[in-house]
Length: 59
Image (cartoon, rainbow, N blue to C red; front, top):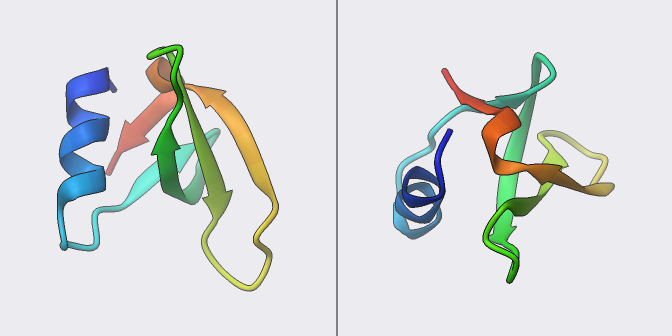
């Protein structure tokens, strides 16, 4: 995924499925470095991770 698509997903009200390492995640924010994003797993656990934008896949 690229940075512009992450920005589009963050500003969208739609439920857009994004996966990281095959697991469905929510994107919380694009980080200031412009290369990473903060995400958390969909579901009851809200453990956040910082991942490379290029490793996110839109389903």
